[in-house]
Length: 433
Image (cartoon, rainbow, N blue to C red; front, side, top):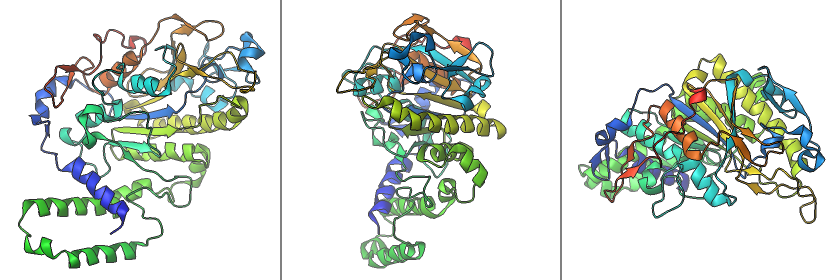
């Protein structure tokens, strides 16, 4: 049997054999007070890996001049009067009624690892490694709480985010299913579902061979541990040849729609994310890398901004057309922004550095109102001057709309009194909820 299938079997073993509702020996029902009336059913996180520049995207400052804007020195009116974004995003400008912009996100961290951790957990590094938002939602909205999909409840397209353990102290059971592959290719080779170079017929022959050789399993057919392994194998084959395979197969999708999303990895990942939402998956991350632009920033933006514009704008419209946007949160942002002042000097020659003092996040759907702006930066985008928003404010608002009490607690194997988020949750984004 292929190593892909074996790894998927192990994943299924970790993810499904605990559906009785126990975590660290405690019934999940003990944490039921964490659950509140929900509005949203799913989250699509578009993670701009490396950090996108806020003034090149959602908080333009054309009046700041060439040293800050370079060639991206124009803004454009959106379909919501008074909201302007960078002129490099004309398609998103037509969708502003569907999203709100947070222009005052701040944490002050300029290191990738720490900034990624705080943006995705809401916690500063300490003695505990807290779980990411995807793992938290997988805990409270996954197999222990009514989800019964074949695809795991936390999916990352297409490459692991890295930087830190997404599952934190919750353990490997809540790690994301990372697809690998490239959905813009003729065949989206999802790891554990599509075995490269191996036909379906050959895969089934391998399974039959394994069964024929499994004499120990035949002798001990009533042994519960062997039965559990058989269950894992059956679930793995459901992933490989059942509904899951159809979800990741884009060959039957409308070709005009695929073109509208953009025939690139990001655009097609957005389409797959919509299909995963339709299948009931509660948390999907699109790990959209390539934004760490210390050098050749403006050359790279010529590719990245049109991709972002097509993929994200089409995703918002597609979700709305299918009546899914009201129940699906879309949030787009990275670990930080980038330095407002361009580094023209060698060796950067027109690059932007890390910048955690002030940056932007886009939020749409799932109960978040559209056509609004929260917070304000100064004339060069260098500091927050109105309504600073911390990562825990952002995540707490997402949790609340997903029906998870942001002031609740998290189970752990040490019996500690661990809060889901620091503080008292007073920073919720009330302006857009």
